[in-house]
Length: 103
Image 1 (cartoon, one colour):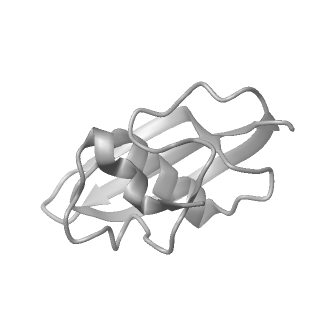
Image 2 (cartoon, helix red, strand yellow):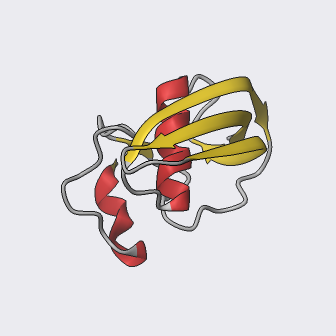
């Protein structure tokens, strides 16, 4: 079964001020038909970003490539309905981050 990654540029704004811009960032994704909202959620989770107000993606490319591993989110699992702008009320630590995913 092939594994997939997404490459993208992103602009993240934070509710407490400031922003972050990335170019050519890559993240493991669960399938080739992943949507931009899920890619944004995986990106935010993989970096452990807090107080994220918005995430704008551009130049999104999805391609077959073995997963490289993600520090916070299990790469082979889909995220639930949580989004970068509505994270869980309590952020889990790195070893418990799987509560965002389902089987």
